[in-house]
Amino acid sequence: MPISTGTAEVVRDPDFPQRVTLHVNGVPSSSLDLADPGFLDFEYMQQMAAVMALLPAGPLRVLHLGAAGSALARHVEHERPGSRQLGVDLDARLLELVREWFALPRSPLLRLRADDAGRALAGAHDATYDVVVRDVFAGDRTPEHLVGTGFAAQAHRVLRPGGVLLVNCADRPPLTTARREVASLAEVFGRDAAADGLLAAVAEPAVLKGRRYGNVVLAAVRRPVEDAPVDERPDLRDPRLGRALRTLPVPATLLAGEDATAFAGTAPPLDTPPSP
Image (cartoon, rainbow, N blue to C red; front, side):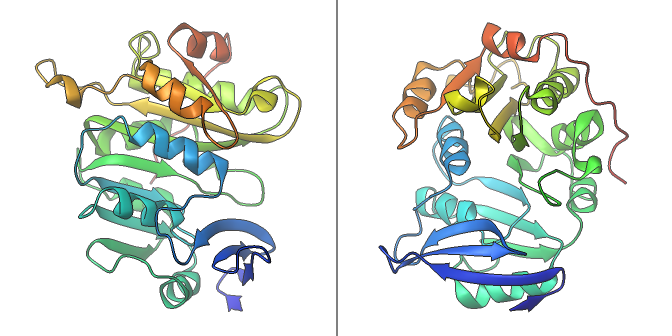
């Protein structure tokens, strides 16, 4: 089907006909099970879901920058009924089609907005969201205005204390971009964020060892208020998170605490201005 930015195609899985993959301009962008709203196929989304499980029980407010087929938003609503979510995508026609094709939570549980992700983030109110997800690509790269310290500052601003930013960073050996993104998050979320369990990286071992191109999920928590209850103080060093990631269908490695600091190494932050 023609969309505003090119073409969209839905391809069924020949082995599981209820499972479909949305291709945008030939690139797999979302995978859904039409009979199971909790299903997540993409490994990086499974990793993000494992991080979100550390947040307090109950509904969440989530901002998805890069909506596509809204697979992660379906999962959040399935796991945490009553969550309020906003999915932002540049392509207005694509958002119309996914509403038509897929069983997505209705508004106001899930609102879909055609907009530039940076502009939508800049227009969000302070301390509004429990989770901000960045999953935006132009080709195989994230647009420049959605990386670095400028983006991190805007995301930090709209997160509630104890809220988490989840970043899908696609990179290739030697993972220079991912390391610089971790350094950028540390610049904004706090130089001691990694040491305090507020900054981490997650990826498959082969990606972290520099053997191939792949996704690195970065997680940064806005520091909770001093007197916040224990369950409102997510700690990315939590052993439960490491176990959850290791037991995924494709096991992933958690780099938190000193490991996150070592991963960034001496990489300089990506200094970028805030999104307009």
